[in-house]
Image 1 (cartoon, one colour):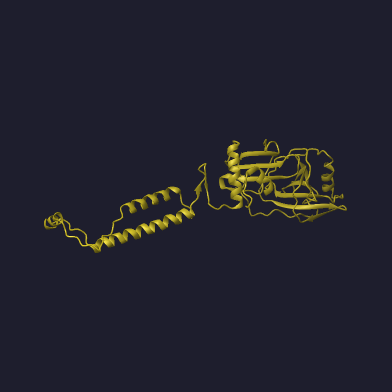
Image 2 (image 1 turned 90 degrees about the horizontal axis):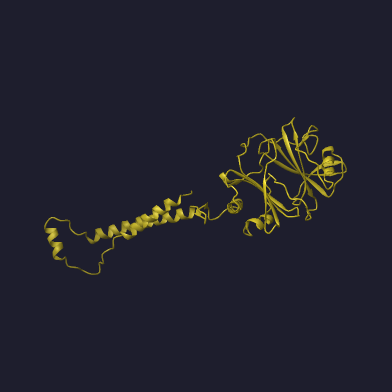
Length: 321
């Protein structure tokens, strides 16, 4: 249950009024003689003073009402969101995702980045392969797995943080993507990591530093790269459903592998299959997870990749989340 703070304020005011107006029980240990005014009022048909029993009952009833109101107020305070310094509602105990999104909102406000609709943002440690990408639906306070690119890659802006140690690319105020459907992403067929031999390059550009050969070999299914892993993101073209898998190409055989790979090289290709209406995003990773060296800035990556050590550098997150 969540309650608006105005309700809490109203109950608090009622509580204060009731405590201020609370009758004081008469001291039964002392006896008092009725004064002349009381006697005259009673003889003239006026209302008689309340008896001790009536006053005690009134005090008891008021005390009970105050106690009930106080308990209600305490319960609402525990269940209600508090307000931060910017007037933004937040719960007393936030989940990991809520904590990250809250911290990201503060960064966006400082940088005049929109906190409406959807934000795609990528942080990269300069001249390294360490990065983290967030896809945030601010309107619903949640992460998205991917921001679909139906027709062309996203246009994005860039800036640096931490005295140039961190590069940032972002696209803000993006339209909400199509809702997910129950239709599953088709599994890989007889041409891993792709669905078939009919794939074609999408928005292709030639890769430098000898990285073009990795992708040429992957498409052909022939090569031997024991020190590299291909991350393959497969989705129905234009929809948010996403499957992420890792493959190694060794001895002319492409095999799916399990593991956690964090050092992405500055080398990627996108592919489409018009026959199966699928989109593939392929990134090259260092298989040894050794800290890589990257002379090129990271592009905007529209896929969710929460890397907490990276995010702690840029969002001032607590150590334990």
